[in-house]
Length: 313
Image 1 (cartoon, rainbow, N blue to C red):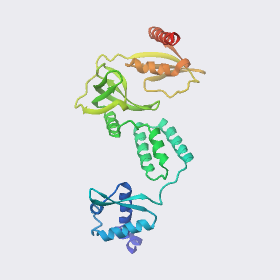
Image 2 (image 1 turned 180 degrees about the vertical axis):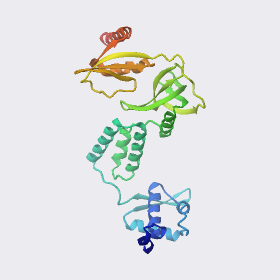
Image 3 (image 1 turned 135 degrees about the horizontal axis):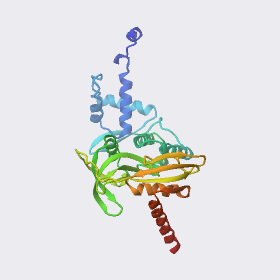
Image 4 (image 1 turned 45 degrees about the vertical axis):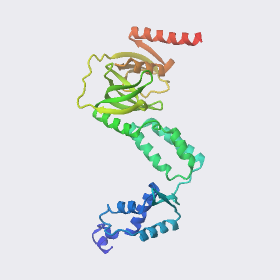
């Protein structure tokens, strides 16, 4: 302490090794059942802890954890004695009403964050479930989770691929043709309408497209070279959009051309007609196609066909 008061330098001499070991054991036993050897091996990686702990010393630490309110379980796993913390006094106590409020905050946050931030948020909530003393929380969170049907390893790999705009080969569970291999020149990941999509150029049809990430079963390969898309023809559609539309947060394929008092003129440009049609249907009666006239007529004809199908039923 005198050394610290002299030059404000923190050294290991200022640290309670007993307290540190107790905290490490607390963390390990919460995580999963641990044996003496596993605990000793973990502690040995700290160079400032030169001495090993004996079995008797470990029992002293376990007794100390019990005295502060931890419930510790001892069990035989593969004929080896292991210890785990079943409960502890640091758990958060949430009522069902409070849980609903937390989940409401979660659902509001995910509307305006990136997919990377979404993964980080999900990781935080998963850790939080370990400290909340209410069995309903984990069940309700899993039900609300956007990533419940997605392999997080795939998500993390896709984030990295999109950052580098890499070309990948994936195993995709197509709703029409089942499992198939697809080559994609990756662009970005986005969260839309409760689902996560991978956007990029599908090299099979040479068009910009969206792929539901929950249907990507495996990234088979990251290609060393990129295929330069050829014959990638873009469609440009001009629309008139009322300002009372439900969502005026535009995607990358949309650009505001003109803004008047009560309406906007917006251009949608993409090589994927499906993405354009998807946005037009989303805006519904608040949107009117201005040009090109050929696309306007084609779109109206499709709407008439849809209407006829309902009337026939």
